[in-house]
Every structure is written in structure tokens, then in C-alpha cells.
Amino acid sequence: MKDGKTLVLGIETSCDETAAAVVADGREIISNVIASQIDVHRVFGGVVPEIASRHHLIAVNEIAAEAMGEISPAEIDAVAVTEGPGLVGAVLIGIATAKSYAYAWGKPLVGVHHIRGHICAALLETKELEPPFLSLVVSGGHTSIVDVAGIGEMTVIGSTRDDAAGEAYDKVAHVLGLGYPGGPLVDELARSGDPDAIAFKRVMLEAGSLDFSFSGIKTGVMNFMNTERQAGREPNAADVAAGFQQSVIDVLTAKTMMALERTGRKNLTVCGGVAANSALRARMKKACEEKGIGLYIPSPILCTDNAAMIASAGYFAFEAGERADLYLDAHAALELD
Ligand code: KG4
Ligand code: ZN
Image (tube, rainbow, N blue to C red; front, side, top):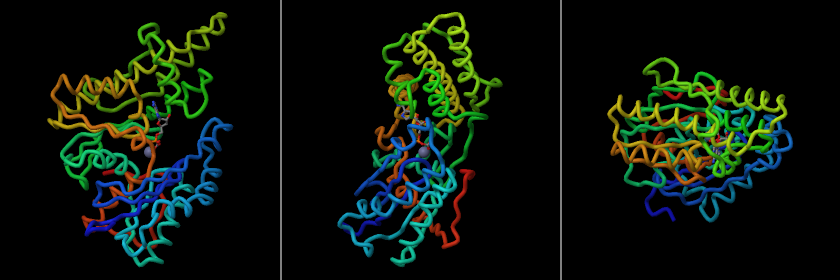
């Protein structure tokens, strides 16, 4: 199994997925186990932090054992774990687990920034992809454009000033009565809608800004629904979903293309949960083809939270000499650069 390769066990518990994975040399997935808590949180319409922590605690050792499979602890070179940003109690469970393994096995411990993990997901599927490249990170908690000069050299050049794109998807899904998590449901419903039937605002902020604002579009959809319902009309939900989605994707694509032009980067990765969105994937593909940009979007299972991406980022940090000690702490907020 080992074959002279560096094996990293990754652990991810920052939100509602308990995940563990073993990755070889930062690029080859040996195992990738994900236990989703979606069914637990669905009745509440969103992730309940305390319940998430408890479920991580119940599941994490079993998930890690499944990821290890036949691999013996002696073959593992380092244990990598998400240290933030995320739900602090949830992150803490992963950290305590990773520390225990690292201590018991006598292995180095590496703390990983969750977004650095999302960005490294693209490296798992495209072995030849090397920095520099630009990365659009779109998830439930983050929307940022990151210039990746090197794996250890990431600079945020634009980010949301309010809601993340995924958060807007989830809230719009709620208004449409679609359930939780909303992103995939809006994605699905939008396929049968007309994206031009209802025009929602595109918030571009100041000319040339690479920042985002998605709270306005979310409120715009809510106001539209309220006004229509008060007038006794029930809008076509598929048209609302398609119109909302088109507006979000217009902004994401325009800003990303602007960032590519400004940085001169020739390759783009799109990652994070919203990168699983079918319409965003199709639009980015078209825009990148027109501009001669290489586009790398991980498979949907590597876009949403997983531990293979944490093991990959952990490998590169480990190779760069980064080590955490047993005082490693969980952070609800953590700067990438
Ligand atoms: O990266 P992720 O799993 O967790 C965070 O780090 O936030 O992203 C979760 C987010 C949720 O808001 C979810 O609704 C959204 O990603 N999402 C999608 C799709 N699949 C997941 N949004 C739009 N279309 C999808 N197909
Ligand atoms: Zn994430």
C-alpha cells in the first residue's frame, strides 16, 4: 500500500459531515469516508451546532477506522485535521480525535485551514495541476476568489461582504419551501424554470471590485415572493429558482473572469459545495473556453465537505515543514492568508 509514498490521514468535522480519508503524496485518494448528518439537521431546517458536535463525537472514530481500513498506523506519516473556520464545537471534536491518534501513534500533527482544503480538492483529480492558478471558493460559509501562487502562498483577492453564495441558495430554498440543504434542490428545480422570466438584481458593488454581496438577492427573492403572495398570486417556483440562480451565477462568473484578467492566471479551479451546481459548472466551462482558460472543477463529492481535501492540504503543509503541537486549537474564524 505504502510503496514509499507519504500517507496522510485527514479528519474533517467543521460542519455537518464527519469525514476521514487517507491520501498518498497529496494527490492519490486511498480512502474517502463521509458520514453526513443531513437527516439529523433536516427537521430543524439548518445545522444545529451542538447537535453537530454530538454526532461528530459518536461517529468520528468509526469513520476514521473505516478510512484506515487495512492500513496500519505505522504506515501513516502524518495526521491532518481541519482547525477552522467552522462551528467551533464541531471542529474541536476533529481536533481532539486527530491529537489522540497523533499522540498514540507517535506521528506529526498538521492543522489545516478548511478553505485551503477545498482548494486542494482540485489537485486530487488533476495530477498535473500545479500553481499558479486562480480559485473560486463557493460554499455554505464562504465565497472568495483566491490567488494561488503556491500551495502555501494563497491570497484572498475578493470575498463576500455578507452572505456566502451557498447561504443564499439555502435561504431561497427555504422561501420556496424546498427543504434543507437547499442548494441541490434549487439546482434541480431551476432546470425546469425559465431563467429570464423574473429578473433579480445582480449586485456588482463598486466598479472593479472583486468582492461579492449576496444578501440583497436573497432579500429580493423574499420580497418578490411576499408581494406576489399578498396579491394572491403564487409565483412559478421553478422560474424563481432559475432567475435567482442565473443572477448568482452571472455575478460569480463576471467577477471570476475579471480576476483572471487582472492576475493573468491561465488556470482556474472552482471548489466548495456550490461548485457542485450544474448551471455554475456549465457557465464556467463556457466562459473559460471563450477565454482560453484551463478549468478544473472537482467531482461533486469532492466539492462538498470531505476529508480527502484536508489530507491533501495537510500533505503539502507537512512537506513544507508545518507541524502543530498538542495545543492546536479550534477556530470559528481563521484568515486564509
Ligand atoms: O463546502 P460545503 O459542503 O460546506 C461548507 O464549507 O459550507 O458547502 C455546502 C453548501 C450548502 O450551502 C449547499 O446548499 C451548497 O453548498 N450546495 C449547492 C449544491 N450542492 C451543495 N449549492 C448549489 N447547487 C448545488 N448543486
Ligand atoms: Zn466546506
